[in-house]
Length: 391
Image (cartoon, rainbow, N blue to C red; front, side, top):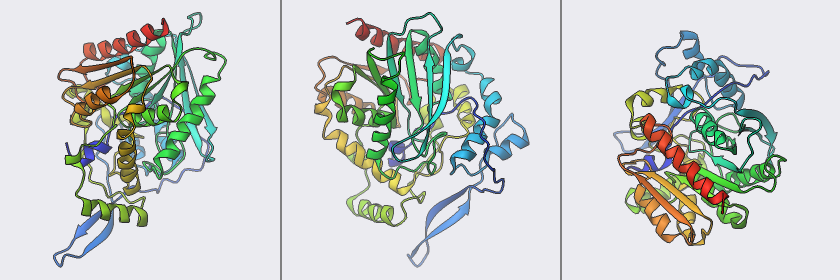
């Protein structure tokens, strides 16, 4: 497990949302990297980064997919262009999505003045709602695409499911992939889900929070900030501790810290394509490229440093976790170490806690395994929720 694996979770995205803003077709994607020259001096270079064409789509769509995604309005246009393509993908989450689910998409301004994309999935009319489930997505990901199918399955079991894109991710405003302060992101989530819990359809009902990968870190930080406001926590391959052996040496960390203050937005953390580590099923791995608004470049310096800081804070406070806890992890996960989930399970003070390790499972157990395994894991989540709602 290398350091970049700690930071990256790549997944995918979803449907449509027209936007009527001027669109600059000349926006170009770029990447940054450090070059060490023979005389041992180091310089920062900026170069164009061309995306690999997506097979099976038109040249026009590939041109659209290559636009610079730094800006929210660009990401929204790209998502709109790929809406129908994504609906036709050969994945069980799309092909077997329950019918009759009521969905809603909207934007709202957060406390920082940023426009946040929000979505909900409710059971079909006439089905009583048991509880609310609020989702926190992983790093680089969005609250849609694969989660669209996951949310529909949970909603079909009688739950109201809610999700949001963090600032800088998916369809929300903010520089793409940039987390200048992890605590601000946590407060964004707290603010939004406080509004969700007051909605008429779920007011007074049990409320659960669910996080995947980096979203697990967000979820834990939210719970630590407001421990008495959630009836249960579901964590899927959570990023809640970075093993000492994968952290850079202290001198390197000092350099990274300095650089993150000087050029916080630079994409200088090492990165690799984690599709092979996320999806155990090759056929599903090929679909990762259709998450056209996900963040797949090198992590920005400040983002990487904030993730390290957040996980260190969580590691020092896991004993303060008291809520009913479900932790789920693929036993062969090379992105977030399942041993860290074991650590969390052992250290959490929750009297009601469950750890499920799935033999042979990779990082993306909600979407990247065999159809049968995916549905089993979804059923495990629903069964756990059902048993807590009945208590």
